[in-house]
Amino acid sequence: MTGDSTPDLREQYDALLLDLDGTLYLGPHSIPGTAQALASGTQQLLYVTNNASRSPADVANHLRELGFAAADDDVVTSSQAAARLLAERLEPGDAVLVVGTDALADEVRGVGLVPVRSFDDGPKAVVQGHSPQTAWPILAEAAYAIRSGALWVAANTDTTLPTERGFAPGNGAMVAALRTATGAVPLVAGKPAAPLLEDALRRGGRTKSLVVGDRLDTDIAGANETGLDSLLVLTGVSTVADLLRATPDERPTFVSRSLDALNHPLGTEGDRGWRAEPKDTDVVLHGPDAANPNDPAEILAAIRVAALAAWALPEFGAVSAGNSVAATVIDAWAEPDPTGGGCAVSLHADAPGIG
Image 1: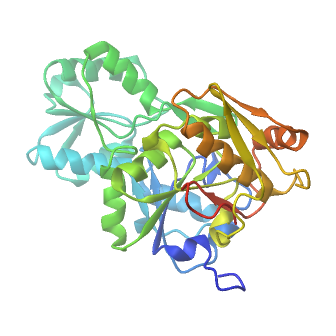
Image 2: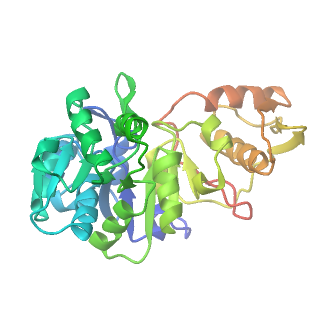
């Protein structure tokens, strides 16, 4: 907690449900400042990932190598959630065709089912998770099984996977191929569907949890689906432009440019003199003449005002600058800045603006 009586954002919660790719790291490298941002506080940290390609132990080991405090049991994966969904719907010993890594197959085996890789083995279900080795032969085996009536569970439907080189195809891209080939729709275990976050809540057993992630369509939508507060960090997939166009089920409780916002309070400075006015389908943003456009708090205040104005328009088009300081800030918010300032903004219309 900071020196005043206002609690830091994280102090309002018992547990933090943390996304990984794009939130804590990109590929093999941590996002600058993320390990330090999580080092303080008494909240339980649960690492909740849609990526089903690695075992929880491997994920935890990677996190520890990057400087995060993570036990194996602190990691909750979509492969575990997918295996649970299968176990609830199949009989022990049933065969499940695995499209994914050996780590996903291990989770299937761990719930008493038999992982197979061929339609000829008579699978009662297909489970699909990300693997960089997924190719036509295994997709064909899965298509045969699904067309024959097998239950289909997807670990997640993320269309992209953030890496240090850019955005690569995610599991959802391969799921889309099977949807096209079969006309079927899978049962989804990962975010934005509820099963993965429900597993995390059961694992934590805490009364008030905050979901922290970088994707509106998975992390934030999953939090809303599960009735949890959320913090969108602008370090991965979703951008301010995406936030302005977020549908109601994708709108976060808070937004920040860095994970360190967890360690700062939401203040009572309102919107710092920023205002927005509708003009047809656009939003015209005006900043106070005395504003410092390099101040992270000014950038977040402007994002808050612009987002609330954009969400109020039935057909939002674009944000334009009403003065020079607004033009500078609009340019600044388009650039990622994971270490730039420890402030967060509430996106509730009646909440204090900026910390």
